[in-house]
Amino acid sequence: MFGLGPLEIVVIGALAVMLYGKKLPEVGRSVGQSIAELRKQWATISRDLDVSAHLEGRDVRPARPARRFDDEGVGATRSTSPRFDPPAESPTDSSAS
Image (cartoon, rainbow, N blue to C red; front, side, top):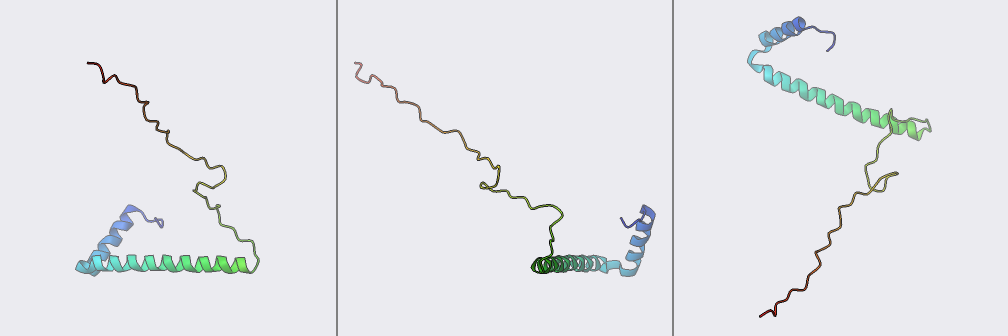
Protein backbone atom coordinates (compact mmCIF):
# COMPACT_ATOMS: atom_id res chain seq x y z
CA MET A 1 0.00 0.00 0.00
CA PHE A 2 1.99 2.97 -1.36
CA GLY A 3 5.18 1.45 0.08
CA LEU A 4 4.16 2.25 3.64
CA GLY A 5 5.06 -0.10 6.44
CA PRO A 6 3.05 -0.77 9.60
CA LEU A 7 5.00 1.80 11.64
CA GLU A 8 4.35 4.58 9.12
CA ILE A 9 0.64 3.75 9.06
CA VAL A 10 0.47 3.92 12.86
CA VAL A 11 2.24 7.30 12.87
CA ILE A 12 -0.13 8.67 10.22
CA GLY A 13 -3.12 7.35 12.20
CA ALA A 14 -1.84 8.95 15.43
CA LEU A 15 -1.34 12.27 13.66
CA ALA A 16 -4.84 12.09 12.19
CA VAL A 17 -6.33 11.47 15.65
CA MET A 18 -4.37 14.37 17.14
CA LEU A 19 -5.34 16.77 14.35
CA TYR A 20 -9.00 15.87 13.87
CA GLY A 21 -10.03 14.19 17.13
CA LYS A 22 -13.80 13.73 17.30
CA LYS A 23 -14.27 14.92 13.72
CA LEU A 24 -12.22 12.02 12.33
CA PRO A 25 -15.27 9.96 11.22
CA GLU A 26 -16.65 12.97 9.35
CA VAL A 27 -13.29 13.62 7.71
CA GLY A 28 -12.98 9.96 6.71
CA ARG A 29 -16.49 9.98 5.27
CA SER A 30 -15.84 13.13 3.23
CA VAL A 31 -12.54 11.71 1.94
CA GLY A 32 -14.32 8.50 0.94
CA GLN A 33 -17.05 10.42 -0.87
CA SER A 34 -14.43 12.50 -2.67
CA ILE A 35 -12.59 9.37 -3.82
CA ALA A 36 -15.87 7.81 -5.00
CA GLU A 37 -16.75 10.96 -6.96
CA LEU A 38 -13.26 11.03 -8.49
CA ARG A 39 -13.65 7.40 -9.64
CA LYS A 40 -17.06 8.16 -11.19
CA GLN A 41 -15.63 11.15 -13.06
CA TRP A 42 -12.62 9.13 -14.20
CA ALA A 43 -14.90 6.37 -15.54
CA THR A 44 -16.99 8.96 -17.40
CA ILE A 45 -13.92 10.59 -18.93
CA SER A 46 -12.48 7.21 -19.89
CA ARG A 47 -15.75 6.14 -21.52
CA ASP A 48 -16.01 9.43 -23.42
CA LEU A 49 -12.46 9.07 -24.71
CA ASP A 50 -13.13 5.51 -25.85
CA VAL A 51 -16.24 6.65 -27.73
CA SER A 52 -14.44 9.57 -29.37
CA ALA A 53 -11.57 7.29 -30.42
CA HIS A 54 -14.10 4.90 -31.95
CA LEU A 55 -15.76 7.75 -33.84
CA GLU A 56 -12.40 8.94 -35.19
CA GLY A 57 -11.80 5.51 -36.67
CA ARG A 58 -9.00 4.39 -34.38
CA ASP A 59 -9.15 0.77 -33.36
CA VAL A 60 -9.60 0.89 -29.60
CA ARG A 61 -10.47 -2.40 -27.97
CA PRO A 62 -10.89 -3.19 -24.31
CA ALA A 63 -8.13 -5.13 -22.55
CA ARG A 64 -10.35 -8.20 -22.43
CA PRO A 65 -13.39 -8.91 -24.55
CA ALA A 66 -16.82 -8.65 -23.04
CA ARG A 67 -18.43 -11.98 -22.22
CA ARG A 68 -22.02 -12.81 -23.02
CA PHE A 69 -24.14 -14.82 -20.66
CA ASP A 70 -27.34 -15.48 -22.52
CA ASP A 71 -29.10 -18.46 -24.05
CA GLU A 72 -28.55 -17.37 -27.65
CA GLY A 73 -24.80 -17.00 -27.23
CA VAL A 74 -22.39 -19.07 -29.27
CA GLY A 75 -21.90 -22.48 -27.78
CA ALA A 76 -24.56 -21.96 -25.15
CA THR A 77 -26.33 -25.05 -23.97
CA ARG A 78 -29.84 -25.08 -22.70
CA SER A 79 -30.34 -26.74 -19.41
CA THR A 80 -33.68 -28.40 -19.06
CA SER A 81 -35.32 -30.09 -16.17
CA PRO A 82 -36.47 -33.68 -16.50
CA ARG A 83 -39.89 -34.05 -17.95
CA PHE A 84 -42.53 -35.09 -15.46
CA ASP A 85 -44.84 -37.85 -16.60
CA PRO A 86 -47.70 -38.58 -14.23
CA PRO A 87 -47.97 -42.23 -13.24
CA ALA A 88 -50.24 -44.32 -15.40
CA GLU A 89 -53.55 -44.98 -13.75
CA SER A 90 -53.99 -48.62 -12.96
CA PRO A 91 -57.48 -50.02 -13.16
CA THR A 92 -58.80 -50.75 -9.72
CA ASP A 93 -61.49 -53.24 -9.05
CA SER A 94 -63.97 -51.22 -7.09
CA SER A 95 -66.85 -53.63 -7.78
CA ALA A 96 -65.41 -56.43 -5.63
CA SER A 97 -68.18 -57.21 -3.24
